[in-house]
Length: 150
Ligand code: C5P
Image 1 (tube, helix red, strand yellow):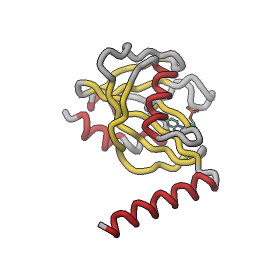
Image 2 (cartoon, rainbow, N blue to C red):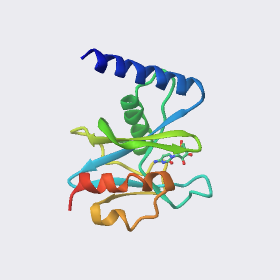
Image 3 (cartoon, rainbow, N blue to C red):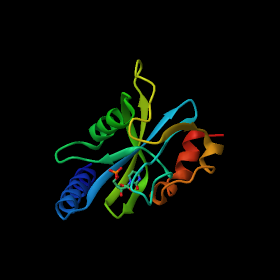
Image 4 (cartoon, rainbow, N blue to C red):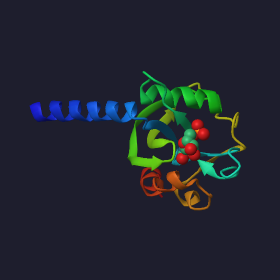
């Protein structure tokens, strides 16, 4: 038990040092419903326009990752979601570290809409491979495939 507590504490401290050193955390969200995940098509920057991502964005100072997931999806999709755990490992990106979180729509939420994206699309496991994903997100597709099932 003690080792578990110390381990968790060490991980938290390491994370704080990392964040202090400028390793920005970006959350990406695998919003799952009925065996499908919501993919969103980027509009910017020009190099990424047209490519698909799991929606999300930077965690703000003092904000939990779960709160960042809910805030970003409210801003980008007009949807009310609840984060429900991590998916895959940390992915290094230019901006820092990308962490994928699973999420579900809260009952009564509006249908997700492309408020800041070119389009949004619900895709099943077979559909994942048909989209041109941004590089970082591509790494989580096998884990996502397992979550969505066949
Ligand atoms: O969306 P935004 O521009 O705020 O994202 C910040 C950084 O995180 C960008 O470099 C973007 O490419 C990256 N990102 C990513 N995959 C996502 C979301 C963001 O690689 N699903």
